[in-house]
Length: 68
Image (tube, rainbow, N blue to C red; front, side, top):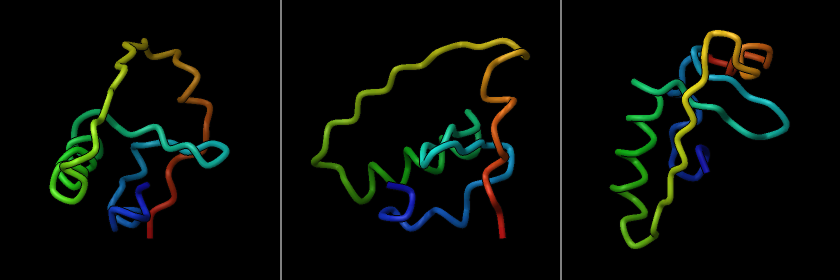
């Protein structure tokens, strides 16, 4: 979906990736995603399930999102 929205190269290394799933950093990267999604796919309903995690969250053990 990041590729479809044209933002796959704009996501920062503060986000993570594992097995094709991107875990977006909540401020900049998620804001970017939401803005592009609304702009390009406004007719698609987006359901977001937010989970608050502490500093020991599993995502911290994943690979950082690759930046260029």
